[in-house]
Image (cartoon, rainbow, N blue to C red; front, top):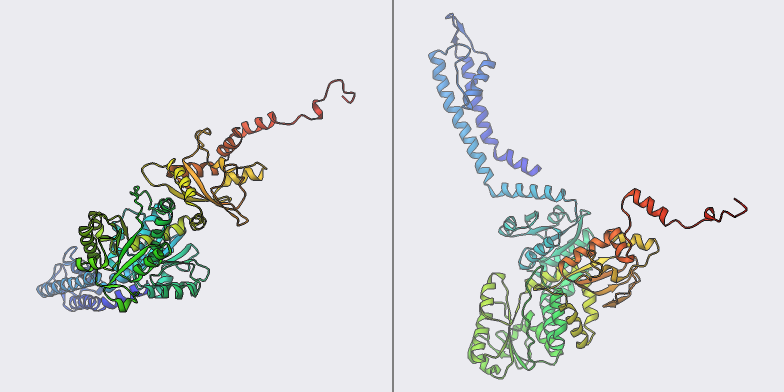
Length: 579
């Protein structure tokens, strides 16, 4: 605010001086030039009358010769004063308009407005640094879960595009995300800030954000994106809570498709975007795969596939710079001769993993012309090319920004998902098939939603109230539809983490719930709504648990208490000698 006032006064200093001088000269001239009263006697105009006259004349809101008609010398001076004051006002107003369009002034005004908006936030929010594909996805998904966010990005056009989004108001600032004062202004030290998310496209910038956050607010969770293993190790060295590597994440998921297709399908369902349509699923064939590009992405994919016993033939243009293994074919993969050398006719699949979308599309199109039975995987670097990749008919499209963004959303909205997936990976394919069949039983045309519920006074007050009364609340009670207790909600309990920190996959319906238990559910979105309603409504949960509807009014509660009052000595037989 101080910078805004300082800039305004500094830039408007000369125009204001010109206006003041024009008024002073005009007033002084009217005072010095003698006038004449209505009797023909000389009459000198006072400073008050001169100031009054110039005030309404100079601002062009009126004109009148007061208190007596002017003499010719006064009228000549008035004409000069009229042009002098009007021109000075035009100069001042023009300078003001120029100031309002000045980029520096706009930047200060925007910063002042941003700081005020952040100070007025009274609900939990996340500070997101970087609004690329990943950051934009995080913003939209958090908004869909009614979680507020504050955005910082160097690109002002991306910040301005927030105003065009159909979202609740999201404060955004175009500034240097590595500046500690910028992070503080964005609410880093506010108690409402729940965490910092570093999602820029440069590892060293993300690392700087993470270091700054951990130094200023050590207890604040930090989620950081890293695309190289060196940066990942560096970021982890100073206690960053979560590190997201989109290339490693995709490589592990892709390898999972060979080992356990059903488990991969469950993973896709659990990590799909909010209200996204179900995508078609095809199991990649085993055999020889051609991998074009041995950068960060190609290296991660090749490592994961080798663990699953999948043979890969690598094509790389810069074999020395990337440290490609022996036997790598030098080339880009966009030429037919290079693909022939790699054995495209015998390959079962091809992975286009360069950092150029045009090259990746060219690789896929050239390869499918040579072998139309190929299973195709392509890396899409820019979300603006969605239409092109969709038209290419690629089996699997890998988008680093989307994978990183969805991983962040999962960490925030379903923190138990990581524990479930960790335990589920150790299960057999038959177990995964049974799980898929159970999930399919509650599906519609959209992938299931996942949510976490903690047995606590804040989230489930009705459950805590009945537990404190000595009642037994089971998982089946939560899975019952409060609108019809003979019907189960369309959802499944995937995982429970007990207050004792023990874990369990697919808990039984008869499981007794305790204070502090955390549960991961998967099902239709409306199932979550009804479940949370019954967990908060004592009458609904009591009816589900016992089949007895608690009276709600004070009179009915008193009558119910009398009706269930135990028999006492006062109701003894009349023959009792004590009567």
